[in-house]
Amino acid sequence: MKFINIGFNNMIAANRIIALIGPDSAPSKRLIQEAKDEGRVLDCTSGRRTRAVIVTDSDHVVLSAIQTETIAARMMGEEVHDDAE
Image 1: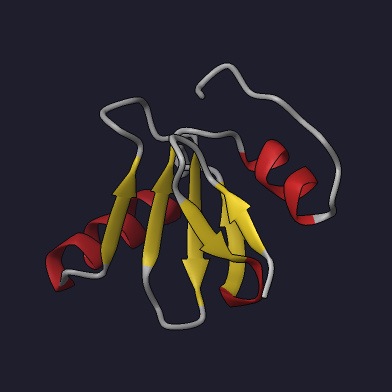
Image 2 (image 1 turned 120 degrees about the horizontal axis):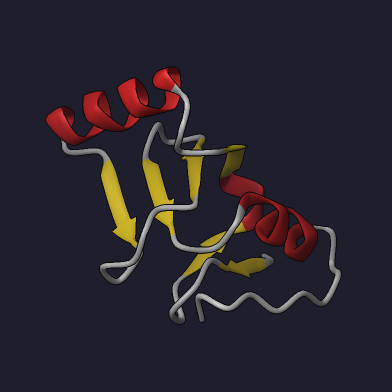
């Protein structure tokens, strides 16, 4: 099983990720709010600004302070460093 670092020593199983989306669009904001209302949000931002929204196959929504491009590169096995860490 491969784990991806999503910032601040938080890891997520790569094979459980369904989508990586930006947090700024209206649909993603609705998705986050609905998940919060239902208790399905995992906030892994450590108080920082949300830069990526990760949707898992278990219907959980994970908030990360790492950019979507950085997480995608890590999933592909590339070495990328982000300032948020």
